[in-house]
Image 1 (cartoon, rainbow, N blue to C red):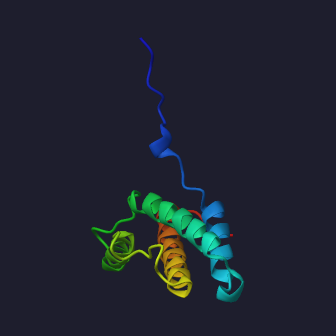
Image 2: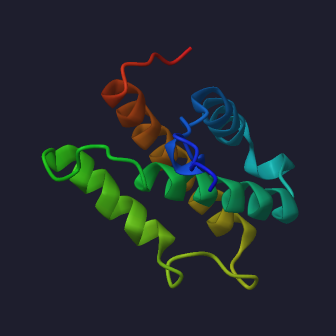
Length: 119
């Protein structure tokens, strides 16, 4: 009989430095020099981080501000809210920035709740 590992993938800490660096990069992007492919790739990556943070216990049931962030995130994650292939690039660009901003705000909550510090 093999023993289950004590810590699984679900219990691994979130890579705050990685998320911080990627959201920084997104927020420094300029519409005039961004390709649609880059916008779509970074949006998909940001959505992944947003989902990862939503799976964490961030105290949304006890904190109205955190609950509001969750509501905003679920609205962004709704497939009917996301830009599609026919969406103009500028709309996709600003959606990407909105995902990055919200991901960053939830990351700050995560850091605060877990006693960490942002660099």
